[in-house]
Length: 281
Image (tube, rainbow, N blue to C red):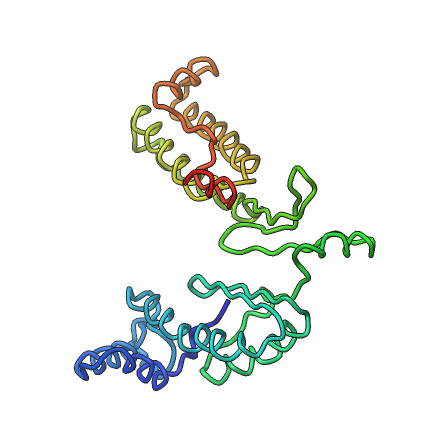
């Protein structure tokens, strides 16, 4: 992850000119970059960084990283590697994979210098270089250690096995994301019980749980999704029964209400198995 409070405006405008030929638009974006921020009732001019809270900020940050990082990896880092090299980025979070450790260490050594040149700063506490892949699990066990894992886009990626004992990259909802999602659901249910009737509250709760499953219900993650649905169901039952002094539902009545609303069940929404996807065609 990166800090965008030191983004160089001149570099940003230089990057934008690569695709935007109208100087009026460039001037308009330049004014927005220097528009300033409101602190204690006073507007403070900004000479660097992207406008915080602006709808333009995510777009500008993505463009900036495209030129600073994406093109640099594909045109400089990748071709110079001794083995295969892969790179994936979403917003300000990215993962790079290398076949050989020396390529990975060389990349780590060059990364900070590259970012600092363009006014970016690497989040050291979230940056790691780990052994991962077909041989990482066996090598870790030989050393008496557990195989390392990494978190990307809310999923913990870890070295697993197929039923036949072959290596398989597996993913599960990270503990941090699971805990945060349940806390947010509980906070919402606590507030919503005062504003909605029971039927509307059930329908809205169903939509929230469904939204969670639409993202996280992927191959190998059914257990964590079942944990989320189980705990969210109990949270909803608790807050429904606190809607008034009398209990709204017994468990039998609550299950009938869930059946009426069509409470979501865990099923894999996204199949990440390349073999099953190939068979589908």
